[in-house]
Length: 560
Ligand code: C2O
Ligand code: CU
Image 1 (cartoon, rainbow, N blue to C red):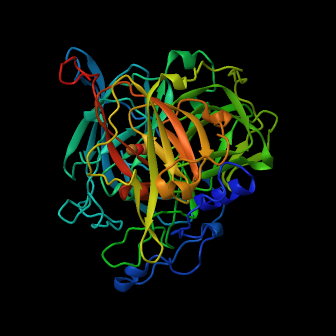
Image 2: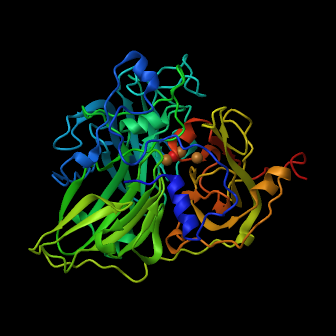
Image 3: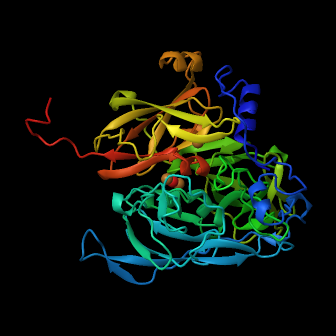
């Protein structure tokens, strides 16, 4: 199953790797054990006051690999509409409804109530080409009452707000601010919003998901996410596996009750059900538990997305077989990287190529933390011969020199405990969402953002709009920092792994480390957000607005 981030940390320490010893603050992990407890969910105390306890389903008891892996359909456009930038230009127009639905996660599990885009979870794939702008009308046809535990004490989810609110965001998209899906720009059941996506960016695997203030974790948990892919001519010229051999694998974890219904944990505090992290025991891929996929003995391209609220993936192939990573969050790497293990934090993407040639008639499992959640069944009969390629070089990904940076921002990540030691609030730079904007890079400028992780766990940090590169991670003395905010390094900087050298929009900020990224703020001026992509953290203040400001106008006053 998934490992918790704390286990990852322990593993990294044991391996002498990324995490710095001595820089760990203690904190209680508030989540399920990975081995499914047989009894009632232990975080359902508040629930039990009104309702009988819901018995948890132990997924290990289910028959494995009895359902075919669903492949999300590619949604067709519904005609054309004028571009908001140029009324003479007609753009493909899509209409995507959010509705409540039920779907079977497994042959032997009753249908599960979920919320999906265009009638499915994950939603359909939106597929386009670089430079081909499009319009999407996001239509909220959800019920007015949430079926998951809304916490009205969280900022943005107060009781005076409508309980069900949605705003779609395309993660990784370079879009004007008014189409980015700002968390406060939500709309309610019966309303829709039409947003514009220029897609002026490289071929990549993006994803769309809900981003409504204070309930993002619940809306995504309910099923509001899907893949958004962009191709371009340079990528097509590489002749990578394509068409039926290019498959998204959207992976997330849930807990279910024995009736197959989603079980989201609640705290023991009446009226404040928020829990600070979620880890499930049922690993779901493209909407199924333990699916199988019939494959031909040839190369396949898989677009992996970790769509979990809080768990990270530790992926391996059975028998420790090698595979190649060809792409990261925002497109192809410079060259394929051979891997036997792939770690993917929430919101990160990895594109991989697996070659099933020579495995005719065999089965091969894809594991996370050693347990198979997807089975490949390699057919004996060949279809057409495999004419696809895995080129030795993919594209040029020039490193951004540090000298281009005009400013370094030191940004802390912290978690604050309640009296009983439970992590109750997570902050960026000790600032709340509604405090004045402090990050205000100039349009076109390059900055280094240094995430100083003061907390006990890794946080996947994400910036909207931009792409960045990972510079390094360096251990520092937490006690010195806490004493007088001085950054005292306790070891050398650790360069990013080979598969982290491409363009990224989400980076793992390890505990006890300063994780540095270099970012060019290009595209649009305006207001965006940056945040931790652990959805519980994001919903509880670990998100901040930031402004990209147009280059200073020449005026006597402004010039220094
Ligand atoms: Cu996946 Cu703010 O986004
Ligand atoms: Cu976090």
